Image 1: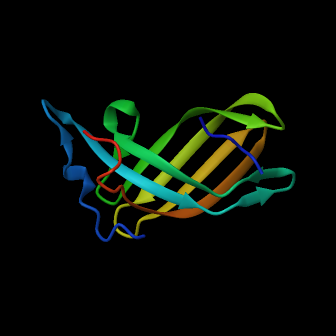
Image 2: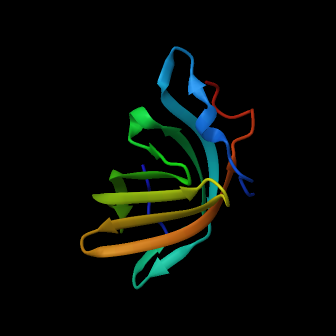
Amino acid sequence: MQVIRNGFLSLLALGALTLEGHAQTVVAALECDFPPASTGDWNMAASTLQYYIDTAGGWRVNEDSFSFDGPTKIAIGGKDSTASLSIIISRQSGKATKTLRSEGKSLTVSGDCKKMESSGRKF
């Protein structure tokens, strides 16, 4: 759930990780840091988010990027709402762009991602 409140990958070869027995499912574990962002009365707090890049979960893996487009739940002013979430992560620079759209509003924030440490989720 995305809540609206107020590293470099260095040529990430993460597309090579696969789940055992599921050769068609590409998985990578990334940790992304986003600074605070705001537009008008819509604010997003700084956050560190973990993304599990899984084609079965709606992620697309391209030669240059990982991307996701889909619905997500957010809280705006203490009220739960549905939003559209778009994420693009460059496989070469580790730069990420996250855009949330809801009720005619849009908020985009850019951050940096890195491969998750081995203490993260195990595959």
